[in-house]
Each structure stands twice: as C-alpha cells, then as structure tokens.
Image (tube, rainbow, N blue to C red):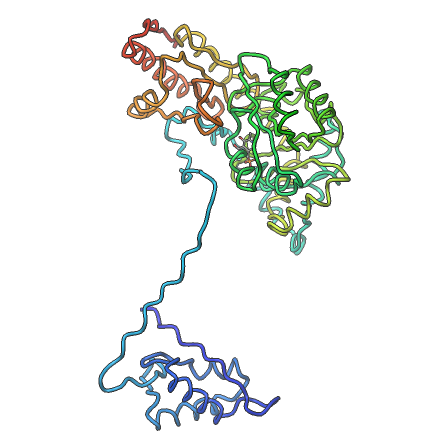
Length: 493
Ligand SMILES: Cc1ncc(COP(=O)(O)O)c(C=O)c1O
C-alpha cells in the first residue's frame, strides 16, 4: 500500500543565522497543533527529512519529537511514523476542500480520435503508415542518441544543420532561402501559430473552405476572420475577393496555394500573380501553406507565392504528410526583417523544440534517405492517385464531380445537391467505411456538397472498396430523395 504523505511544516530558527534547535521544533509544532493547522492523525515529516532539510542532526529532531510525544501532543506508531495525537473522542472530520475549476474558453474542436489504420477511413489525409521508412528513421535516431553530449542544449530557431538542409532543398525548388530565414517548428501548425500571435493587426483572410484547424487557431488568438470563397471547379473570383479585402482590410491572407485543403485546388500562375498584385495594392501580407508538396512526382515544381513574390511572403511546410506524422516537424520560411519577432514568439511558447527529433531528421536528410524515400513514395502515390481518379471516373454516377489536384494527399468529391452528406456518412459508417463531415472547413452553410478522399492513406484495393461503397450508397440515396435516379455503376476490377 502507498505510504501516506507527511505534512510539510516550515520551521525557522529563533536565533537568526543559527540552526533550528530542538526547542524551536517543539515550540513551533506545539503552536501548529494548538492553532488547528496541524490536525489529529496527520503524519509528521520523518526525522531524516528534518535532518536533510534543516541541516540539523538526527538526534535533535528525534529529541524534539520525543518531547512532544511525552507531552501527549504526538504519538509514534511502529514502522509508520510520528503522528499528531488523536483525542479520545476520535478524529474530527477534516474539511473537504475543492479547488475552484479553471474557467476556460477554447476552440470549437471535437476530442481527437486516434487514427486507426485498420479502419477504412476514406477522408484521412495522412500518408499510409505502410509506406514510411521506420527502420531508417530508427537508425538515424540511434546514431543521434549515440553522439555524446552533442544535443544537450537547443537553438531556439531550430537545429542549424536542419535549417541548412531545408534551405538548400528550397533553393533547389527555385525558392530563395537562407538557413537564417528558416525557423524549425512543431509541424506547420506551430508556424501558423507564431505568425498569428505576432500579428499587430489581427484581421486574417482565408479561403472558404479552409483547413479548419488553422481557422480555429486564428480565432483562438483573437483574429477577426474574412472568408474568401473558393470553388475548385471554377476560377477564383478575384473581383469579389478584392472588394471584400478593400472593405475588411485584412493584415494577412492565409492561403494553401497548391492542393488546397480540403478542395485540392491549385492556383494558376496567373492567379498567384493576381494575389501578389492585390497584396501590393491593399498592403496585406501573405502566409503560404505548402502542405501537400513533394507527395507525388512533379509536385515540388509547382509555382509558389514565395518564389514569385519575394521574401516578405511567409512560407510554411512540414514533414508530417510525406515522412512521419509523429515527428511533428515543420518550418517557417521568413526573412531577416521578420525573423527575430517570430523566433521570440516561438520562444515564449516553447523556448525551443525537441532538438533530438530535429537532429534525427537532419541525419535522415543528410544521409540521402529522404530523397530515396520521396522517390519511392512518389512512384507509389502516383499509382494510388491515378487509381483513385480512374475509380471515380468509371465508378461515380453522372452529376458527381471531383477535383484533379495532381499532388497533395486528397481529392475533393462533390455530389449533386439532392444527396445529403450526413445520411450518406451514416450509411457508409454502418458498412465500415468512414468519411468526414466537411462542415468544419466552411464558414457558414457549405457552398460545396462533398468530402475529401485521402488517396495517400489507403491501398488501391481498400480505396476501391471505399469508393464502391460510396457509389452504391449514392444510388440508394438518390432514389430515396425521389430525384432522377443516379445510374447504377460498374467499377472495373
Ligand atoms: C493545410 C494544412 N496546413 C497545416 C497543417 C498542420 O499540419 P502539421 O502541423 O502536422 O504540419 C495541416 C494538417 O492537416 C493542414 O492540413
């Protein structure tokens, strides 16, 4: 059985600069007992605890306790310790204390559910765990741990070697970057966090729909939000955007410029240029989230705002979707003039991040494992992406649309308005196929009627099972809705 904790009593020496004496202990404990601060049956500190804390001899402490036992104030129980004496009429009930609960307000997020790879999760945006280089990462981690004393401290901006290889990789993609402009973060999420908390004027525009936890983050940090409508099946309506921007005057526009989450939309070069023109005209900064780069072949060659618009564009990316989600490693590319305030924002939150993880990733990239991993993953994910498009093209009834992002981990599937997503979700769940509700990505009533398909998460066979189930349920639901029936489908095996 666990031993009962002892009460802590603070003793002071009656003679300044001297040790606490036997008399001091006797007087001060008597006073505590008389005042009721020490109650019957409370356990006192063991003699060796007093010896250790007060720097007195064991004998002094023991003699003080013996005297209080003799006076009837304490009682000594064999092998249990010394206790405040219990009166003959028993122990009075101790007051029940209940600390006040903290009053919290927080983001409107459901409790996170663990990812269960055995479930057929059709909307999961992670990469299939089967494709990850676990053995090589373990090897790098072991070799990092074997370096004696090297990683005792941390660099608040992030592991310098890792910043260097990140900058080098960005330059190879045509993005000007210096290691000193790279801040290593706990996933892209921390990059978004430190930008948002550093904004002087907290009005932020995002796409609508948007990566929902970014929106929740901005709201949580007190930002006023401006939704800019995005429809992956049309061009961006920049006239409408410009009008909204001119009125609300956001200080920051957050955009996922390639393979947008959740729609899979990628901005054309002309659209990126239009955005830069608006940034110049209305004076808002740009925060570019490149979450889906490097997952499929060719995807790293997409144009970026950062490459087209220069060093004021804040650019974030992470290793979550292409390497290992649990590494929690991402980065923010800023500029010499914005770096210090952004690093300070990171420092007040975490001081610095886990250098051992950063060093492991540095080792992994430096050994050439990352490039080899990407080459392998590109081949496999290209196949899954094309299998996904084939399944949708061949298997979905007319009236169903889907985006063709060519990168990132997801395709947006858009259904005729006669189909309601919630009943579809329920019916699919009963068959063991899970799709997400996309509502949280929208600011209000969704102007799209669909959900994400995460083609990187599932093998082609499982994806086929999932898509087949969706198609079958669509036929049933459209018949129930009394709409012109969607055609039964044939999926090629
Ligand atoms: C568009 C986008 N940006 C950023 C993040 C944050 O991811 P992480 O912090 O793992 O890099 C996510 C997560 O799903 C995302 O979808």
